[in-house]
Length: 116
Image 1 (tube, rainbow, N blue to C red):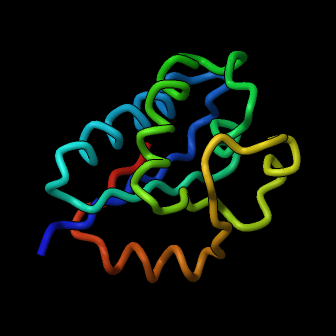
Image 2 (image 1 turned 90 degrees about the horizontal axis):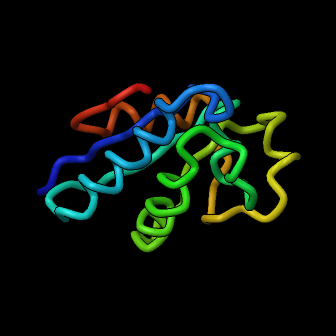
């Protein structure tokens, strides 16, 4: 059974490079196919899913690595009711809104959890 890794990203990609770095690392680990990698975005990190990432810090990481995450066949999880979801336009990858209670359940099922 492969380990389950969850990346929780809460930084603001409009002002910080940390969310872009988290996406890059998640895509890199997932590419090994040695672990099941999932990504959860909390507001304001959900901005990274928008169709216009050119205004974000390190936008190349989002353009380059979000398609890799999309190809895993699992949606990116996002904070349910996040006010930033309204401004996404067309999302670059499929996402699923989950409530905080569901996030806790999914965290409990993970081997590793990384917070950015």
